[in-house]
Image (cartoon, rainbow, N blue to C red; front, side):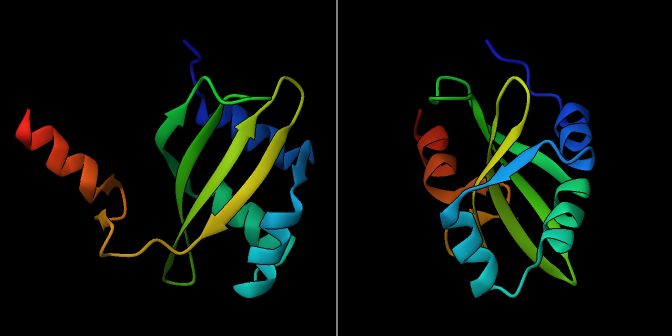
Length: 111
């Protein structure tokens, strides 16, 4: 299993070892987030879900903050770089405290 290390992710981003997908760029434009803001969000975030079997790189969902807004960022943690896949503002209707999917929370309760 892949061990996601938030410090490693932050280091790669700080050292400019990241790629922003076209989809993520569209979302950044939608939310008026420039690259400096994106880096700031990643530097102040936490990993809330991991997807170790994703291809081409294991990926993770991060929760970050910027200017009193919550953002989710999906990124791939590749060997030599981070791939920013997408970002969005999570809906309170779908997320409990922006960290736990409400559908998954309900599935866990029914087990």
